[in-house]
Length: 306
Image 1 (tube, rainbow, N blue to C red):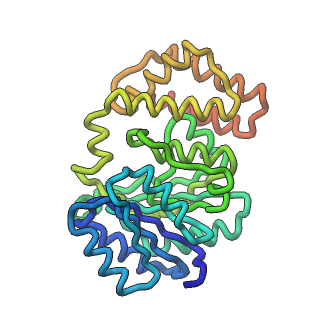
Image 2: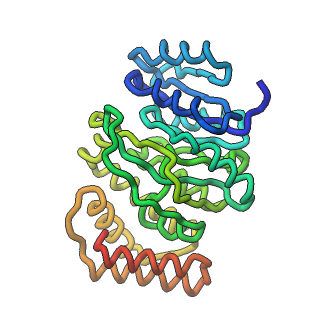
């Protein structure tokens, strides 16, 4: 097979319920210059049989296996290594892509050479594929993405595509044991070396599975996940040379993460002081995203989404 433009990478673990719909959504794309790389992470259900059946029908589908379950970070890093495409489109094994996803993303990246990755909006569906809601249609330019990523992840994994050469050049990898925020940290590291935008296009049907990892993490919301989220926020600050008073930083990050995951109130006065420190340094250092950062913080305060 000649080198495809896009590798659609799908890590798979015990995905027998939904993996067929996921693969079919890629095979039905309006853009067809792709390979589908699926790495099965030691599934114990019938996923392997389903995958092998698809691989026999279409030579663009490559199936690889981890001998034992290694976890999502290891599997995604292996996917980066094994991908053959110019671009890598990330996909989760229980989601479905909208038909125009690959076409729109390839067109954008081909046209905008300074952009290293692109994402979009999502429809939320239940386990039976019924629409629950849709994300508000938004578009974030590169500066807006960077401003938001100081506080929350605005990049939808199953709606994203990035340039493989950048990720490989700078050896960007998913971190183990990041308790549900592996993607967030990956995108923040990528932002150190390139720009990311979010298009106002719906690229994915994002499935809410009650037994899934996201729902499990939300319920448990343990101290390790909060710690990892704090580490991502610290990385965004330090990688942008913004240094906040250490005691203030540690207090505010833990307050912010607990509020984000568990709800409840935070000490708004102290959080405002924290935000002012960030804005002051960003302005003094003439960060090009200062205006977007200020707007993001004002919006957060107005909506009390602390």
